Length: 89
Image (tube, rainbow, N blue to C red; front, side, top):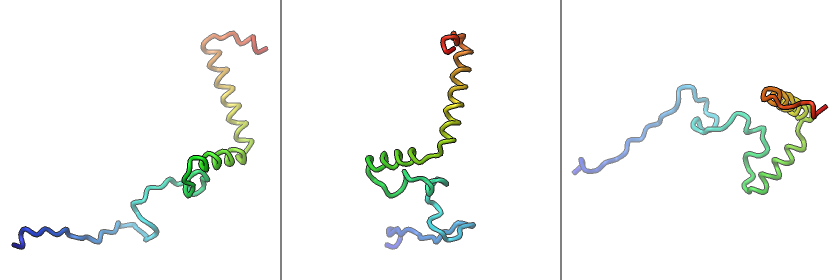
């Protein structure tokens, strides 16, 4: 009755270029180790507080650049739709 017994075959598969550091199948973003909002914190409140602290300590010159780009795009859009821009002057 050996043909009724099914045993799963076990293979010791290892990827070709695997160096042995952690699991080769773990999917993780490259920048997750630099983010404070990912990782150990489990609660929603702690995630929000970490995000707000990260926003407070962010680079101010980057924020100014983003605001300038948004303003230029907004005025460009208003010019394209023929909005009367004289109200800003």
